[in-house]
Image (spheres, helix red, strand yellow):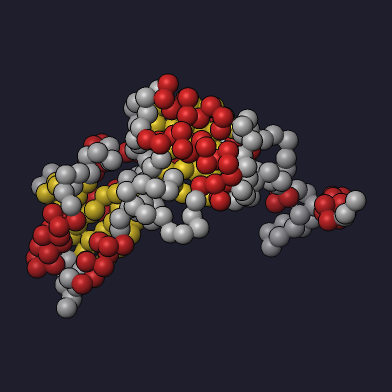
Length: 274
């Protein structure tokens, strides 16, 4: 079964409407039906919708409540913009909707969005992958919530890597988050950031440490729409990427000979054993 209808799953970003991509704004402007969750997406994104578009708030609807809209789109050849907070690839409950739409014969497209973890990094002015400090970012949430975690995906296990971690959907159990981070090996004084409603008008972004994370959350009475960033990269200084070193070369740039020799000596020193 095929249809002329299309459903676009649109990443709305972390909140601020001007963080929509150009493609997201275009898709919303062209849609016959715009589905959005008032509890997660800022209303300003609807400014891009056509005056005659059908606007549906999905915040109180289960997937069964949205399904009739997809069915109508398939029957009438309509275009639907299904707006998700952040990026649809992360905790967006998108896969089940993709399966439903494809079963109805609808064409489906996904528009990526700015994730809240990158938005918070921008707000605090930090790189999350600092050379010689952290070269990986772990995106996860605390186990034991409404959605079961697969075996082996525990915060304390991820914490053993000691790299940058972004924790979503976990603020309601901040004490457990702190305990798991410490149990996994983050030192008590590891830098942390607590971010509520990042890029929204009422955003709150507070720096703390792993050891004071629970107290910080409780002091500000936070329990939802809050992201945690953790790791030494949040305070690291004085390191340098080899990418922009004059001794590094690539397709568009030749290395300076003296700087190249210096860089080689530095790399050899990294591999030496005492």
